Length: 234
Image (cartoon, rainbow, N blue to C red):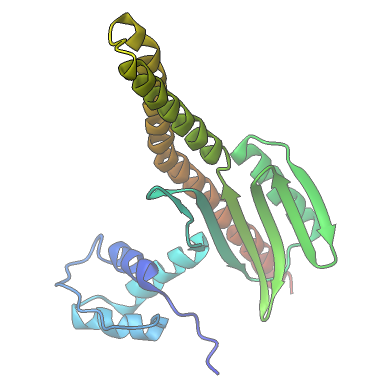
């Protein structure tokens, strides 16, 4: 069974976007695939004049950032954000402490640190970062979930239902004058809560994605630098 890294649709697009930033290239005809290896990416790139080393450099940049995890959606908007990055080796106690310090500074949260055997975790509410073993090494997995979205949606929906009930009750009694101010107020509050909720989600997701990408790059750079130092010392 092949253990070669396979790059999926979003990663393939990002690799070629990075590789073509400073290169002349024609349109890319990507085959239907279940992920492409680096060698397959280089073959595709060669068809449009992209040097293999440029593809390799772009793929390395994507590796450092890690892979985004599937998002949960709420009314079409992202409700969760996650990223996982393969690590060159297990972090030492000192390196894990440095990563925790970076997590606290990046997310502006103290959080809690726990350890269970080979699994290490930093968590702050629904925000989690796991240093965990895999079948062939170690990885850093980060996840978060915006739980307040559900309560905001429930509150906005409740206000809208209240405004409709009040309006129907008043209309049935022929009260369609100043009495309508109250149901209109509840209706506006409900629409405002729902709209604010939906507008905040994309911005929240983008911010969390950028923060996680930064942590992923920091983790890979930290462990790779330490590995290189050890090799030089030998």
